Image (cartoon, rainbow, N blue to C red; front, side, top):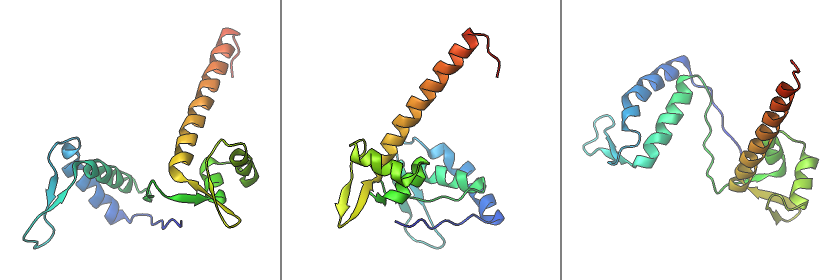
Length: 146
C-alpha cells in the first residue's frame, strides 16, 4: 500500500473552506445529498454516511493538510505498521509474535490488517493516557511541580 500525498494549493484550501461551510449543515441528515456537477442533467446522490467524511476531508484541506484515504480492510507491511505506531520494526515483530496483533504471512512477509492495527493503537494510546493521568495525580498529591 503506497500513500499518494499531495499538499493542497492555496486556491484548493480556499475552495475547500467554502465547500465546508456550504456542506456542513448536511452532516447528520437523513436524506442523501444531491450534487449537480457542471451541466449534468441528473444530480448525483451522495450517501449520508459519505457527507460527513467529505466534510472532514474538505476541512483538512482547508487547513492546508494533506489527506490520504485508506480502505479499512487494507493490510500494511511491518514497516508501515511500525511507522504508524511510532515504534521500531523489531518491536512491532515482537508484538506480532506475542499475539498482540493478528497478521498473515505471504511467503516470508507479514501483513497486518489495518483495522486491527488502528484498534490496537487506540487501545494503547488510551492506556498511555491513563498512566500519564495517574502519574500527574500522584505528582500533584506529592506537591511536585514540573
